[in-house]
Length: 373
Image (cartoon, rainbow, N blue to C red; front, side):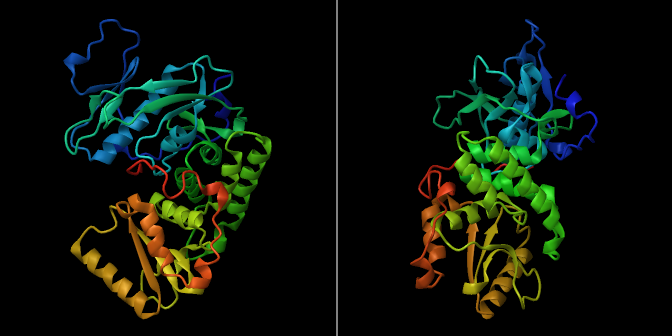
């Protein structure tokens, strides 16, 4: 039975990807006379599949559309694939992640003869369309297609926008096992946010859905004892929260856990603040709050001015304010030191890093950029 048929009795989720970011894929269908020279905007994704590039996109939108097209084309062209999994399934679900250009993951039921294939790489200019680049070029990001043997139950496969993928919670579990912990936590947070639909004004309203998610993950961990990465998965899934609303917040929280600070309250409602009272992370016992500023937070000079007024009001109430951006997080160690300086010595002297979340640590290599739908 085909993977699509196994989910036919359940509602098919609507594709969460905005229409302007959905790629147009051209399949050659084995035609020997298929020539891309007639259409220079066609980018070869893999044998038999081409992306019709759209000019005028921002760099992150170009990367997103290429990544999404790679995943969809791979699933369509490899008949042995049950569905997309890991970061490829996360892309289809519209779960934001840190990695700017993820690998392609296909779930297969048997032992694949070939497990990993290198795919064509591209350079993403600030304007124009992506351009093919030699995988050995210093600017090239090596992209691989992985075939992973996964034993999936029917309820762990969904069809989203016509594409079979692992379910949201199963996707987060597989990423927690195999992705770097900062990216895995970003995806797990996004999965919980999607599953729980939290309301920051009524934090208990999603308690039942949150318990069901953790029960699902506990069952998956128990089923996969001995799987490579399962210790990291336990730590990532235990640290996940439905309250994070961007991968920047997730990565910032990962930094605090790796350095060993007490667990922060995500989307903390600062008492006494006149407006916009929810802060990304809060440690009320120590009067410290942290905020991540993404690229779309400030649209006008007035937005910047209002944010300054909010920070001034926070500091007048006795709170110490830490602010991070994508640029500042490229030097994670320095940012961790800045944040630690805001805590009293009694806290800093008793830091307790979460071992299962360490990965490469604060000095480890992290890919640039962020991938959001």
